[in-house]
Length: 242
Image (cartoon, rainbow, N blue to C red):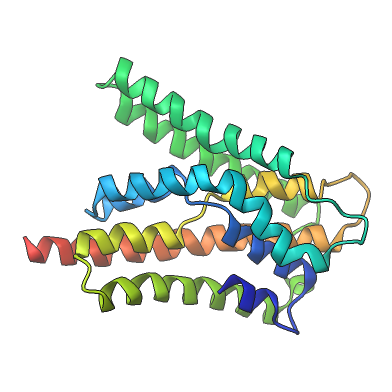
């Protein structure tokens, strides 16, 4: 799906890179939390996240290299090592810390998780405010066509995540875990990798980097909206089955 959208002739370079970035990163713990609220199969969700997180240490640089190499300058070299370190710091380290907190302070683990989620959302909010204040989030420059393509991308991914498991007669709780895992992406990690590939420099215009930033943030916002719909829909179905 990502390759088809990235190869779209009329797609802006920054948007193509942003969509490739969203496709290359895993869901992280956010997908597990969404699955929990949807009354989905938590163990399956955690297993999918764990496998995807470990795999993306290798697959993320490869996928990005395949999808965006022709959009980058000829002398560009994919910083695979740095990306792997960022994935470890953004996904693996919090996962290990969360497991340690759960083991040492099980009664406080739920409250700690809520604080972490709110902190993550606050960080994204501050990035949005800062980028908007610096003039890097310009919807007019981004273009309505790019906006529509980004919406179409997440819509197709969400539809496939719902349709394929349903065609295979997968139980509803499992479908919730699979569908949410496919839709939800770790936006914080995407922003971190974006900063590595296109570091913002004060006073220096970077239209491509701005488009990448806008695309990742837009995907994150749409992801939260669609995730809310998925939670409500799967929750009603699971409750009806029981």
